[in-house]
Image (cartoon, rainbow over all chains, first blue to last red; front, side, top):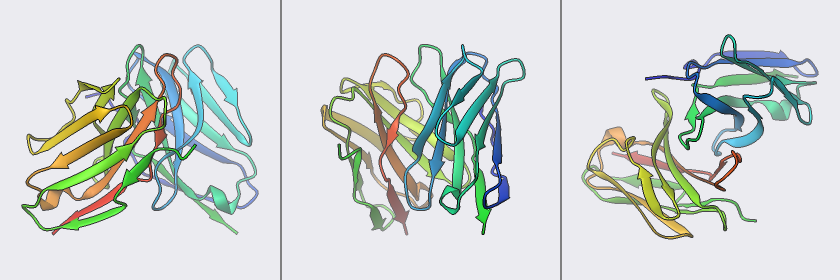
Amino acid sequence: GESVGLHLPTLSVQEGDNSIINCAYSNSASDYFIWYKQESGKGPQFIIDIRSNMDKRQGQRVTVLLNKTVKHLSLQIAATQPGDSAVYFCAENPRRGNKLTFGGGTRVLVKP
Amino acid sequence: DAGVIQSPRHEVTEMGQEVTLRCKPISGHDYLFWYRQTMMRGLELLIYFNNNVPIDDSGMPEDRFSAKMPNASFSTLKIQPSEPRDSAVYFCASRLGGANYGYTFGSGTRLTVV
C-alpha cells in the first residue's frame, strides 16, 4: 500500500539551532498534510497543516514546506528548545477522504 | 474544552480476557477515529465513524476487534478475546467534518496483554 515516510530516524539538535525534519509521501491523491508532535506518554499533538494548493505555511517558530513535484514535506523549527524534544510525525489525508495516514516519525533530541 | 478523553489510561489483562476501551470525542465533532500505535507498525487507523455510523473498518485486524458508537459523545473499542500481540497504545481522535481541520487525539490507552 501507499505510505508516508516509514522511518524513525533521530535528529540531534543543539539548543537554539534550527531543526529540519523531512518526510516523503507517495500518494499523489493526498491534498492535505499535517505535522504532529508526540511526547512520551501522550497522544499526537497538532502542530501545523498545509493544503496541496500551497507550498509554504508558517506558524509560531514552525514552517512547513510542501514540494508536490517530488512528494516531499518538511517541518522547520526555529531556535529549537528543550521542550521541542519529541517524536514528530507527518500525516497525509487523501482528497475528499478521511483516512489520515501517518509516517513512521522522526525523533528530535535537543541538546542543552 | 476538555479535548478527547480516553479511559482507562492503562490496562493490563490476561490473554483470553475481554478488553473495552472508551472514548469521548470533542463535543460537536462528527468524525471519530480509532488508531493503534506499535513500534513495529507505527500509527494505524483501525476504524472511523461519521455521525455515529461506522464508515471504514478496513483497518480492524480481526473479528476479535469491534467498535461501536452508540451516540455522539461515546465510543468503545472492544477486543474479545485479547492476545499478547494486541499489546499497543490505542488512540481515539475526533474532528469536524467539512474542511480539513486537524484531527485531535486523546492521550491514549496503553494495553498490555500477558
